[in-house]
Length: 509
Image (cartoon, rainbow, N blue to C red; front, side, top):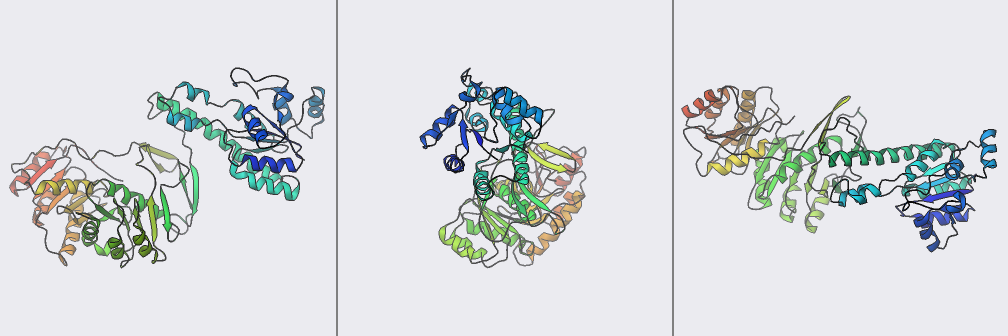
């Protein structure tokens, strides 16, 4: 039975209510200085830890719980006679519950001038993790609680059953070791960052489960959503539960839309854009994106880089789409979209992520920094330079191709995609696929006055340029860097095509 609880917490959320519940069950409360003061102010009788240790806190509080009377009272086995005899001989009081959470290291480090600032060092908890680990090791006899969200369930079980079950203690033990592991990981990673170690010998990643998913890419695959943060980057305002594939498309569409300065709309389908448009307002941007490939846009995910207006919401509500993402919504727009029962409405609540990107390949994980570069210095190796009206079209096309699965080719006007060739095994086949999509576009739209092409990597042969010329492409942007660049330049000159080298590649796998 729980007779005595040692409480020492930094996060005091819900603590007063929990401690009052323990006290009402006749459990003696023991605490350290700051927590003891808090509990006394809440009107609770609290025994100071010094009464057990017979030793004061020293070194500005660096040493207060590191004492045999603390750890002996936690760690002794209640069913081992020798242990019981030892604690009795040394007048060590038993402690059956430990309520501890740790110094706010992450929060302090986030605000500090540098990783090794004095306040960061002082927020490395020593006594707290020691007590947590001691209690967790002896979970059979000691309950360890380190999360405020567990208070209510623990108190309810104590009130109903008079004690905590073995299964509950096991679960609390697991949470405790997870808590200390994540804490140590945060310290390790912060100090590596402070030393400029982007890719250290050992990388520790702590992931917090946000929710179970209905399934993964396919119904027979179990899946869950985890985050390095403690909350999802989107707030879901309405609609069905997000699927694994919805989440992938939502992130891709959102990132793509944010690359544009003008009002922009991006439609994603199966982790690649099927329509991208900009305009003087969101309505025009949406129309340009949807017109690109309405057949593929059916059931897609749409992202905007501006607050979604009521006018655009009316348009969207006439089509079948899986989800809409925006930085926010006009109230009337939100009400219109909510009339679609299953439409997932997402509001972005997290800033741009600058953490390394992780990609699993089974037992291995690839890390790379995000691709935040768009342009470098342009060079024009062809005889004809881009015309004034072609330049914005080329920049638009280059912004689009960055998010299209490799090998990627995109045909665009000045502000809309009109043919996308994605995920092809050869670059000339990507041009062929973009040409097919362009032919479909022309079935219901006039040919754009400006028609340019972007390629996410260099042309290895001139065949892609030759095929593009047949479609009426007048200007091309690509990274350059092929051993056959001269051959490709010659092809452009023969077709009177202007070509820019962007000096940066945007493969996307």
